[in-house]
Image (cartoon, rainbow, N blue to C red):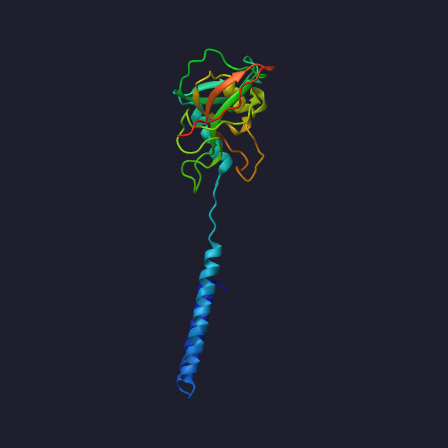
Length: 227
């Protein structure tokens, strides 16, 4: 029976009971009992209705992420960089590239190679979804607005140790660069998912290259300045 039909049946039964109760000496008691029963039913009805309402956070997610890649590819303001593991002469598709929006340009003149150790600050988010209109932030090394003086950095790692799309970006940056990098899911986690992101998630990173150095060298431990 549908909720509306059930509610009508209960209301009719309660009305009949109340009318009978009024005609006998215990009418007031019957009215109180009926009123209490109606309140309990109403609360149950509201609770069940609320449980029936579900919000899908990532509707049509794979298709939406595929569409985003095609939109990035035709955006003339983005720098387009092929994944570093693919030969420049190989046939390619739009998902073989990362797309870069330059936020700041540093003073560095060279870029790290795969075996160099890099020091980076970053914030990663997904495409906008039902609840997260700016995209869910799934990982970050700093809070609030980016500031070179107060940011935190990721643990030191080689440039090639990150996911393919992230590594491609880092190996094309100079010290002091800060980029917003749009990375297709094929160059990140693909069809894999976690509690932080669903399958087929493109990822958008704000990355700052703080420093890098060759294998065998070391740098002092990074300490962010306090405001």
